[in-house]
Image (cartoon, rainbow, N blue to C red; front, side, top):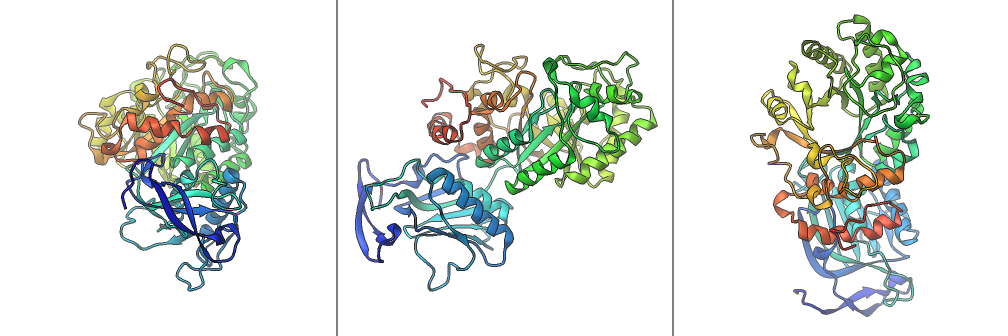
Length: 527
């Protein structure tokens, strides 16, 4: 059956959906076409079957027996459905989909060995008139599929169909997987401090669009934001300042663990960054022996860069870093530690290279992979480390030739702290203005000429915080651009088109406003 304009479908739903006896009734409602759902990121494959599933008060969620991870996913889905619809949907593990007595109107989240699901985040979502099936080989992949399902649930119920509210979900089949394995955003909590709850809110929002990495810029000239128990003055002194002269703040290791736990629940990998050898004024102010400039040290609350440096030839500096990296590695389960490495203008070139190479060894000693801004490619680093491109394409290409993976964060395209235009309330403009369409209209796979596709680990959109100090201001700069970056990282480039995307983006308004996100109402989108 093919859809045509203004077609009215006559389909059979079970009155059981509304709590009645199991007898068939005829229900008539406007056509449902899954391929027209405003899904972001755009899935790899969508096949519509022009029927519908009725999400109502008798819907149930089932997950595999004796699997705690999938059981948690069922509870997560139940809570999200309740937030969006006020329906209280129970989740249990008592029924298998193949059971003869498996109920109608059920959502199943199941493990699968289907070879179509070829990556750790591949999932299959099948929506029928009497059931919804999410298949995945891993809990992470099932979580991604849940986000897609949540986006198919309409904003409003159709109360004309039966005697209780029913949310009509278009039927069909979605097979999906990401283009890049690394799809992230960075939040600078050093220039201005953001609370645990603000970080958790950001995690919740970005996970809805299938981002899987949150890079936390934890230290800079203006502040040190993470407790290091063996060096307490880092937070006692270095944690008390921020841009503009505010009181700053820091995360205790217990606070950081709370962020880790929340990120883990949302299948987000945390990347902690300790920026060095430059951007280290707060650390050197706390422990002056770290300083390599020989200049008087004082608290810094401005936005200038490039004036600070560790002493790269002092063994006590590396003993200090052994402690810091050991403690950070112990509380961060992800595979990465970011060492910064950018804008070290106060460090002599040979000393910079020496420093990066020694710190790389310290990171590797803790069983972690080093990430650094693209300047680290100037040093003799191992092929296991990762370069994050932000400015110099030559550095990215050099890293690739060395066998390093590259994360793409080109400032002129992917920096969330750039203003939308000259009238933007917040942001900077040193890399230019980045409008919502400009943020979307570029191809990460071909952005740097001569950078092999196989060298690209993924994409990250950094949000530096010189001009923002709370969630509302953060969200103004991040949304809606971060939604486009999520699609660029997940969806196949040949399927993407700005004119088509802007229609889907406009339909995110309901979600953003339900979540009270202070998004920028770009005039380029018909909200």
